[in-house]
Amino acid sequence: MRIIRTIPELRAAVAESRKTGASVGLVPTMGAFHEGHLSLMRAARKANGLVVVSLFVNPTQFGANEDLGSYPRDEERDAAMAEAEGVDLLFAPDASEIYPEGFATSIHVSGLTDVLDGASRGALHFDGVATVVTKLLNIVTPDVAYFGQKDAQQVLVVRRLVRDLNLDVRIEACPIVRESDGLAMSSRNVYLDADARRQATALNRGLDDAAALAASGVRDAATLTGAVRRMLAHADIEPEYVELRDLDDLSPVTELDGEALLAVAARVGAARLIDNHILRSADPRGGA
Ligand code: AMP
Image 1 (cartoon, helix red, strand yellow):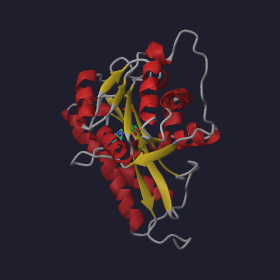
Image 2 (image 1 turned 90 degrees about the horizontal axis):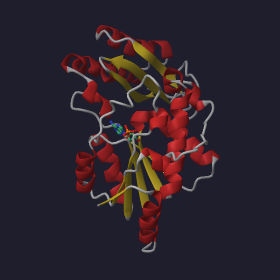
Image 3 (image 1 turned 180 degrees about the horizontal axis):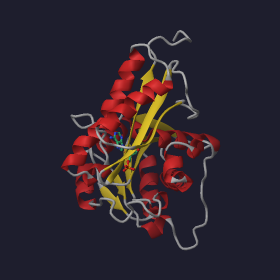
Image 4 (image 1 turned 135 degrees about the horizontal axis):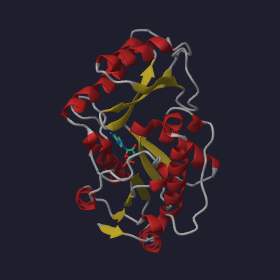
């Protein structure tokens, strides 16, 4: 595995590999790897001749009061883990390589970014995500880029910008990888002390309760989100949001019919956590 710091070197390495006809898979990350990241790397490794992982803690997607300064960073460990997964290129640029002096452009995906994390963290968060992902797609020019369903709204935002800007790449969303007690893996889980770590399991347990209600025929969104809220309250967690939304455009869903996204965000101890399940109604009216 090669560690690459600059855009010209990265482009040259990708061009070299293209000559052999290799398809290129990209896994964009902010590092502090866990099994969630590794699952994306494995998916990329299985399907592509060249696997590129980007490791860049993107400053523009962090709010002023967020954790950019304390975000976990351990490039040596990450490099060893990526190498063990058979990654070919680890693209780990400095911030000045991605945002040189005078950088002035931003990608804004409207609508989709007004709700959930866009409302909670502010619109600039997804502008930062959309801009850096667009740049990475232009730098690496992958055939396929891999994202985690853990960040469900991010997947939708990326799919939309790819469509709207005619980027020639396929976006693959991979399932959420969880700890054995159900907590969704996240680089931010290291912020949890022992008590907060126990509390944090309430997010997935609440989502599980809602999924069970949906499977038993409950369609009312308030009842489904209420199941999550009840579990969080029991664990002494005040959610930032618990919402049932359309899987394609994130419009609010009041009555579950078919599939919908049930998403939750909450501060637990020192960490801000997000999680989601795709709910399926017991008997879709569309007859699917
Ligand atoms: P991050 O380094 O947190 O920006 O994440 C990089 C990629 O890994 C994103 O596409 C995330 O959605 C994905 N990811 C993070 N956590 C998980 C998880 N628990 N399961 C699956 N994918 C994940």
